Length: 532
Ligand code: N01
Image (tube, helix red, strand yellow):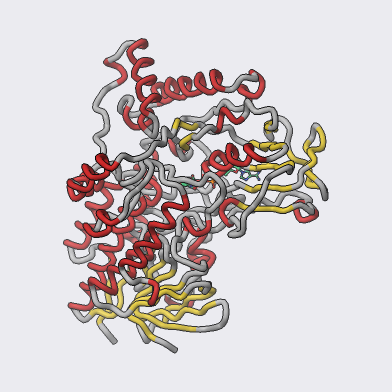
């Protein structure tokens, strides 16, 4: 059985950087396993039409650790497409010569901690095994596709595609009646593209969603060069500003008149991206009245855009804006003005069953040739539970996390020594710019491993007390906001039976400061064992 210093699961943004950092900066022997056929993680799987970065965008949604990489890649647009991000990650893999240490098309089906050996043994789907002292799980926050158990779905004879597992061969909608279930980020991105060629598109919507205009545009070279000239400063700013390179507003809504506020919302709307949410006034995500005013402003934009008042009514969201993932819109609402698009509001007209040839709702039959499931993921915890590692005493993660996703710092788990997660439950994950958040987390993991090596320690593990305090801290931060008042995947509410708890750390900047403090204090909250 081959043995390595570290095994990494996943070769997306987090896993690729972990390989580079541990192998090239720390000199460890490393093997990466990935079930995908190439690098990219999320960006390898989510290749549905219209897929784009939906965060503060390029050039910020990229690695920041290397001048060569920053200078060597030209981002063509402010909101990079899936194809561009995937090509970028392939470029990074080539530049850093990463592929030689990655085993693709290899799913890890089991991982067991060996207390005597102070390390992990993994098993692959083909029965291969490998061992390592450290197991780094860069398994992705949005990896396990949610396929809802809708009655009769297995009887449907048409093609079914899930946005999170999109086929690699071209998918044509030409001349077809297509159904899309789901109107989150993936559905909202795919729907305008599918509508362009489908004979008819029926959208089945459970919850109407807010979206802000993406205002995607070509990225001029001068703008890119200005970023490159100061990329280290931008990196520092992002770390201190919750992942965003731009300062957020200090304006307070109570200091402005109603007319001034509306003018400001219009200005932020015109600028596009996340501006309305993060830069109109302080506290949109914490103050109910302010949030309601901004929500109503966006509802007004939906009413203005969608010509049929009945369709517009069904599209009006009724939750606090921003408390589900904020979506960037590239023509979603305009799509409902097309004659070949119709909307079914599942709250008024629920699905009763699939038939062989379509979908039957309470009010009637919808003939369908093809179904697109844009129904999201068993987010954050799902990819770890799919591996279900067995820790100290053979305890499985499924047992450990049966009622609560306990972690310390979102990266370590009590009873699972020498295992580290990148973007695990309780980390900033999707609430911070993920490539940079991954880099900072991996740097900390590297520091932890170096500490063990230099002090002749064989194993490190979070204490249960540290986990409890961490959980309280995460939930306390979330409780100070409007997030927990909306059902969303942030709370696990999208998966029937999943424990309800806020899954992310909402203050990434203080989180990364905290990681440093924990390390400076000799890895406070952890217990260690000498090398056996
Ligand atoms: O998934 P979602 P997603 N019957 O969970 C509906 C990231 N992302 O893949 O709201 C009917 O947001 C569900 O309805 P409801 C981003 O972080 C990034 O769109 O639960 N409907 C919802 O409308 C994002 O947040 C990018 O009531 C059902 C939809 O399906 C995350 O991925 C692009 C249903 C699922 O929305 C997930 O986004 C895309 C059922 N049984 C995504 N079950 C980029 O950056 C679920 N739904 C490029």
